[in-house]
Length: 343
Image (cartoon, rainbow, N blue to C red; front, top):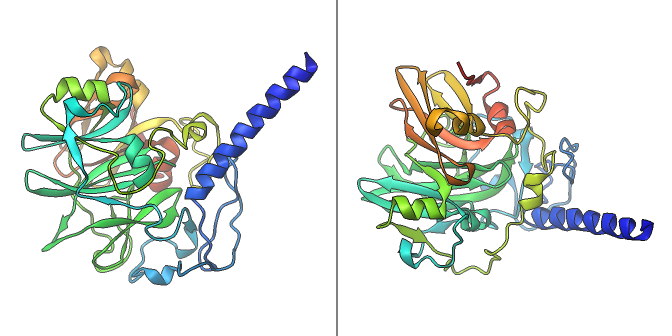
């Protein structure tokens, strides 16, 4: 019996090590100008320097008017475009999306009567999809380390931007870059953090995080982005599954001592003007009828529980920015955030 227990424990340890290795293969940079976190699920690894490799340097990006501390930008993944963003994805009608399982999570976008779903299984490996519906160019962004999903209009001023993955992280959250200016953008800050638009925000668009089965019922005439991307990726598995189940982070993020919620508690974060508020997904599900209504700023925030413990933003104040993410990431970027409490 003792030998069996030891063998079982050894197998469990091997699975954890394998998972760490898989994630690190996607989240490991080597650039002497950028620190990297210590490995493992314990989080808080001290930054270390590594030799330069290839041409990956912060010099690849326009850092003019950088709004975040340079020394807190981490090596987070493969080099620039090593995680390849998708532009103009291949799509099929929802009733032909037999490559998805009923419980698979999708980010759904509906604009002017047109609807499309983006599987998390796709976003795990690409993180950004540049697309267009009803004449509106937008980006679907997902950071697996934060379980953060958001959708925003790619137009700013007279320009329409296309986004890629920089290979860098800030507070364990993906930093994007735009292909026009090579400027950096933060998903959870909702804004450019360098370059000609530093400090400016893009308009966030409505999104629905739900299961494929729920989306198919709600949007039978929609389309779905496929795995026909031109890249060889293991779309049938989730390299972050163990990370989601374990305590601790792969990369450090400020705010880890804010124990109002467990660090990986899923929340919907909403910002209106100077007010930020987090809505735990579990509290949305526990609300009467799975529908939570709250007053925030000049109007209401309305959230609705979906299949599989997901959530939909039904209504929000004009100009509000919204993101689904883990608590640790939200509070790192919004340390003064309010936390919705049931009345």
